[in-house]
Image 1 (spheres, rainbow, N blue to C red):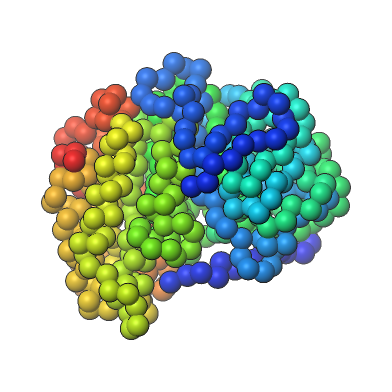
Image 2 (cartoon, rainbow, N blue to C red):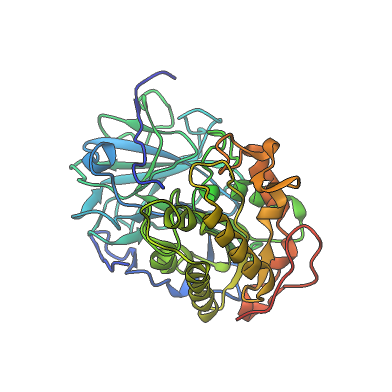
Length: 447
């Protein structure tokens, strides 16, 4: 398919309550609080679990995300981590400056990789409290009614959203690792063909979650992080982020039934504003409020170090970052969630590298490995560093910028995860720490 491309570059590198108007009876999410059906542990077999997410972000100062859409249909491509029935979507207007109306929405199974087409017979119209349309106030989010559709693990879905009136500034996830599409005139939510979808986009607009009823799944692992979690420099449309590879490992293992949700934001930080709200600010919305969450895998802090040790920057200490980790640990434990710490990966020869920053990274990694503050450890650093020069990434795992792994590096990171860390249903439903099986780090005591 040929057509135009509307891509927008994330400029910034280096919790609001709302209610829903319209769609009477729709599942309304107010603020960052999860609903009763989103609380682990103990799944009845009829509860929902998240199978995909993308953390919402504010629009840029100009360009597509600021201008928004009018009389257009978005076809957003996402990949499930677990299969199930009763598919429903979650829409977000978290960063909008006014209400946004979606006049119609639908979901179906993508016909084939790279195509905007939907497999015939799988398209399902979505409703919100029985209505075709829904209006979400600024700061709000909403769940659709479940659609009668069965999906498989690691399957591409197409979510269609039509908005007739101008949306104004959007809520979006800037780094999409799959190509999505726009039909620039009219409502095409009831079409399976690709002909109308002539424009490619590289962001997920408004859609921040897909959920399924999956009786075999006993929880969700939320991977919280920055661009290394988000999958920056992974091959486009190849499902090659480390959370993608981790989901594949879990599905192939037969010994663990958990979904994997990617809550990475490129250029994100733990303590201060980078791209997106910092991890402390977004933790309730992007982690705790995820449906069925039982576990958190934290890999974040390298941007705090890079931004906090360069010339003219604010001073950052290792203890500052460790204090941020301790806050996240306490908040996870307060909700009965198990939280696993990932060591920070090397970045020697990247422009953000400094000897002072490397000293902080080593101190922080020592804390993650030995403090017993986390419920377990994944030693991502050891998995991809060069044994002959441990401050540098092994070349075969490097994307070329000395900071972000390539596909092989992301796969090696997923291979480093000891799946036994995630057995059970979080801290309150069986810790499942077990004896380390040698692929990840050693599990530690909880705070």
